[in-house]
Length: 167
Image 1 (cartoon, one colour):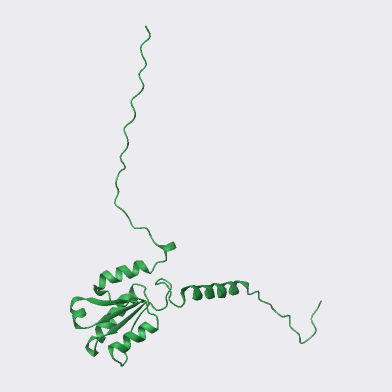
Image 2 (cartoon, rainbow, N blue to C red):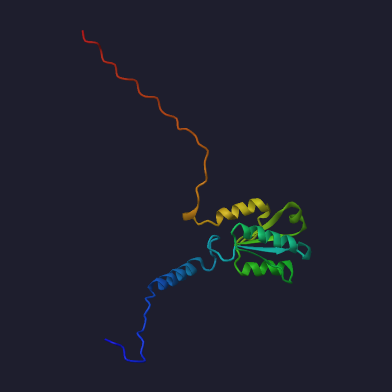
């Protein structure tokens, strides 16, 4: 039927797709209880400088990780080291990377992992970045690593059966 003057036809959007995304997000939130796996986490790496002198290196570490496609931030605000580490733990950061003069000289970081009481210790920055980059790919999207080619041993053919000659 034709519309009366001054009226417009309403447009109705079907939102079932968004509803399923919202439900799936809710399921994931409940399942992981806020402790998202590394590849899905919006809080992957927090870099914490030990002192004012280490701030520049902390920014460098953050930039290196960010350049590898990781979500990394540096805690450059005021506060003690313990307070910064505790805030990162409460915020559920997957990795807390503590840096100071020693780490700067060795191009390394002191690694703490969410859920573990003790730090893992000092790790080379390049090696850690490689490890985290691999960990950042979900299993379904992981690229298989190239293995060296090795020819399979071919079993020798069985000997042909011999038939006795007719007499």
